[in-house]
Length: 375
Image 1 (cartoon, rainbow, N blue to C red):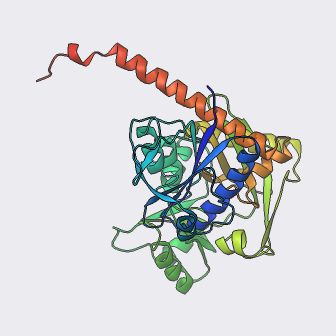
Image 2 (spheres, rainbow, N blue to C red):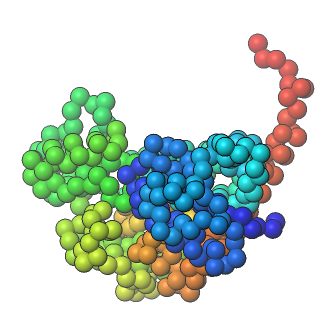
C-alpha cells in the first residue's frame, strides 16, 4: 500500500493536552523530513476538532487559538468514508488519509474512545485498538487481569466515587504501609498523583485524585528502580533495551517529568546485568500480550534489590516529547527515531489489513438474508 498522507491527532480534553501537542510536534517534524505529507488535527479542551493542512507551520503552535490564527478549520467526522473527516466550511474538499498517528494522551485519547472513532472511520491507525486501550488505561482493571495471569503488580486498593467513604488512613496504612501513592485510575503523566505520608496528606491526596477520575488507586510504595521498556509490533512484538528513570525529587511527578529538568533524568540503556535485562524484557512482552496490545506500548516496571519485578502500568500512547522514554529506548537499541515512527506506521497498516480480512471473511460466512428469525 502506497503511504503518503499521515494524519497526526493531538490535544484532547484531558489534563495532558499540552504534552500531547509537544509529542505531535516532534512526530510531525520527523515524518515530514522522511517525505510524508502531514495533516494535523488538534482537539480542543472542549472536544472540537481543528484541521491544519500540510502547508501550515505547526512547530510553534501551543494552543488551539494559535492553530486557528494559522488558519486551522473546524472538522466534522465522516464514519465509514475511509478518511477521518471533512472541513465544515468546505465539505466537498477531499482530505486524503493513508494512516492516522494518534497522540492524544489521557481521557478520550488512549482509553479506547478515539480508537473507536478511528475504527468507525475505517482508517488505519497507529497503536492498540479499543479493547486494549481501555484495559491499559484503567489501571485497576489491568492490575486485576495481570494478577490473574500470575504477573506481580504494585499492591493497591481501589476506591470508587460511589463508595460511601474511602478506607480510613489507619486501614490503608495497615494494608499498604507508608508512604502511600494516591492516583487517578485512568490518567497518565502523573496527573493527579500524590504521595501520602500521614492522615492529612492522605485525605488531601484522595480529594485531589477524584478531581481527575471517579476511580482512585491507593498504591504501596515499592522500593526499587523505575524501569521502562518500549515494545513494538503486532503478532510478533519485540522489546527494546530497558531505560531507567532516576528521580532526584520525592517521586516522578508531573512537575518532575515536564517542568523541572533538575528533578529527574532518564538513562537508557539502564545499567543492568544480562539476567535482569532478560527478566524485564520477558515480563514486558508477557504484559503486552496479556493486555492485547498492538503497534506500540511502554511498559513501566519496578526492579527491586532482590531482582523481583513488579508492573506499574502500561501506556498504549506513550509520549514522544524530547524527554520521553519510548523512542529513546529504541535509539539505545539501535533503531533511530525516524525508523521507529516508520515502523509504527507499517504495523498500523498490517493490523488494519488483518482486521479488514477478518471482517470481510465473517461477512461472507454469515449472510444476514439467510439467517432465520429467532423467536
